[in-house]
Length: 101
Image (cartoon, rainbow, N blue to C red; front, top):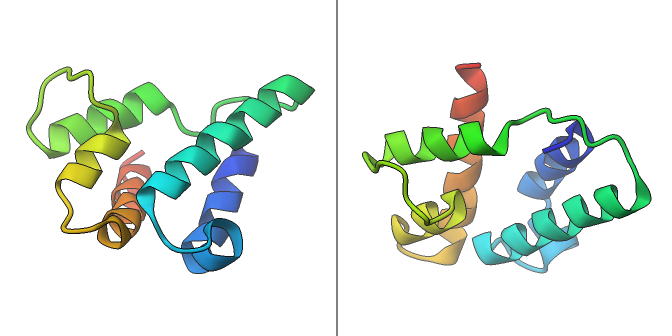
């Protein structure tokens, strides 16, 4: 995840309606993949600010799961009552992950 995308995610956290319509983890997942694809296609600096594989391992450890085919979004979604809760839980986990780096 690039620094540009991370900064944008922090904006989305506080104004999800502006970017996603409503705070949903599914919408956020699609946004991140679309934005990352755009960065790649136009050749923007994709230097990794957050190692996605390392974050995946962090989420797996958090839930006590070893090497799963499920992505971090799905693990968080399954542990949430609804999509809005999952949206905000994603940011809590991401911020906790970054605080330990």
